[in-house]
Amino acid sequence: MNGGVFIGQLPLIKPNSPRLPQIEITPLVALAPLSLSIRLSEEVDKVFWVPVGQLKRAGLSDAYATRFDELARKWPAYASEDGPIWGITERILTSFLSLLD
Image (cartoon, rainbow, N blue to C red; front, side):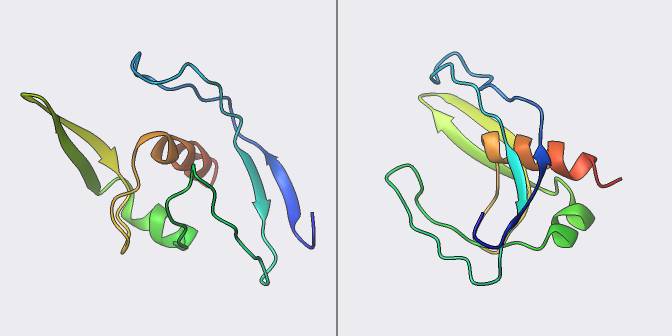
């Protein structure tokens, strides 16, 4: 893993919305090397770092809100300087952070 250390696998996650493709995600947890180089793809808009301790301390203290036609929706989110972390990423983080209790 180019200097990284594989830690383990989190439980399988599937999208909750019937509007999304019915895929299965198996999150993997690893410690990345300090010299990590990240290459974005068409599926990733941007990448940023948030300390795990900060996520754990603040918890789900933010929300992501949007409108679909006349329907307003709101989802729980982790706060970050780059905007709320929500959706599948929030669910993966919540699963991971629950293991740190």
